[in-house]
Image 1 (tube, one colour):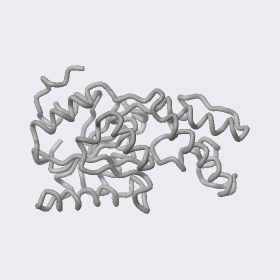
Image 2 (cartoon, rainbow, N blue to C red):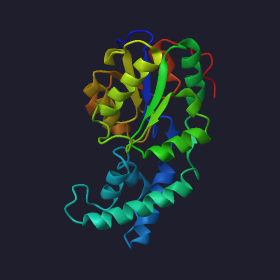
Image 3 (tube, helix red, strand yellow):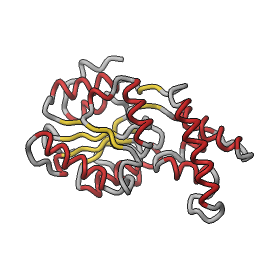
Length: 239
């Protein structure tokens, strides 16, 4: 992967990249479906619905991603129940993937001037709460969620905003070509491409089946692989 070394900004997706939140998201969706007398869905099915934000996750679980079946008020009620339930249960089974913290430490140690941030389609408050809980927030100068802007990934607005803010913070212009997006789905790869940035696709995440068609610049099979891809020594990445 061609990328100026070191990159000046690395943006990380959250679900499926830094944390495995599959069980809690799936349990929360099924709780909402049960509450509204809808049949529950297998976890493996719900997992394929994750990545485009809470509203789309709920719509897909209802079998109505295009909004043709249910009225908006009904969808909003299900979404509210899901978010309220998830707010309480978001840390029941969620955990940080192996080697994530060690790899973030290694990046910060090797490249202290490289800024890191989170850009997720998850609502921003649970994203920040989860990062705070697991001690991840200390690595990131910013954490933006799916409701932080008027658009979501793969629209490049969020990533371009991070690039601009990182430039102000560092006191130097940061180009998209000096930026890296790391995520587990085609959404993250397309976000990077739409912004003019580079990408690493994480095959250990929630949506690895979507990466092949999106063609990221490189693939990581574990968080430790970020370091080898970036050319950083991995002696610090033991679990």
